[in-house]
Length: 167
Image 1 (cartoon, rainbow, N blue to C red):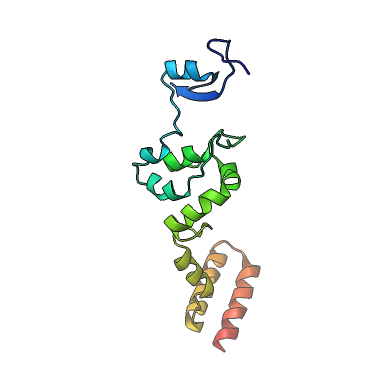
Image 2 (spheres, helix red, strand yellow; image 1 turned 135 degrees about the vertical axis):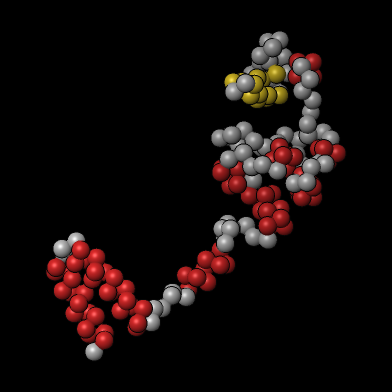
């Protein structure tokens, strides 16, 4: 593929930009990329990890000359490590061997458990049991509303349940 700027050299740099909501992609040769201000981000990658999340990924950067790109969003692992943001759901599969150790170190787990997972599971295990008196009171409230709605068949069933529980 030829450089889209000069048209003479082979393109070896892929640039994506979003300016004012307009998405553009360019394939440039190294000379045109350098002239436009795009440098090799991967050359000094270890010096660029000053951000909080980036510091978690520094020990697991692969030594690659050409980074693998996600075919859906175009993200590379060094870009993910630098920003701390995964490009798309497919990146988790593609970069699993590099991402999961860091995710485990940051979150303590690689499976999403939810915000209140411990609390929710305990509540689900212990259903609230009503006493006999509370159940009868609920049935009486249902009986009153069934009578108001003139649903006499339901009212008769509820009346029988109440008599059964009281007797």
